[in-house]
Length: 117
Image 1 (tube, one colour):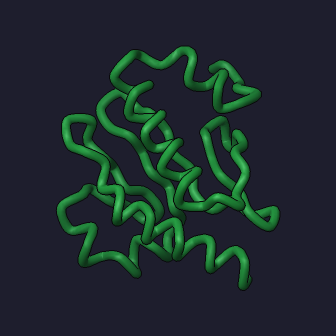
Image 2 (cartoon, one colour; image 1 turned 180 degrees about the vertical axis):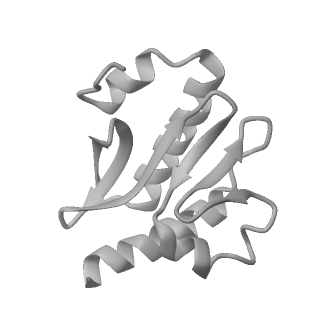
């Protein structure tokens, strides 16, 4: 598996559909957490603030994986009922629009966690 040095490098090799959705997510995260900085962590795109990762995402074959850690999965359980989730993951289907409002709320929740914790 190739090790990526930057999100731009990560994005270069994605198939067109995954690249488009990943770019929408990237832009959404930049807007939702303007003080955060992009990085590659665990070979996935991530944003960090105060030296702590806020969220990760990964363009899988069948869905975009959104990794906000475990706490938001519990805190937003009602809003996440229509998505496949696990302990720290939300699967976002490529054939559906990204839930921008929900992603923003989850990012705000995580920014609050990393800035207070």
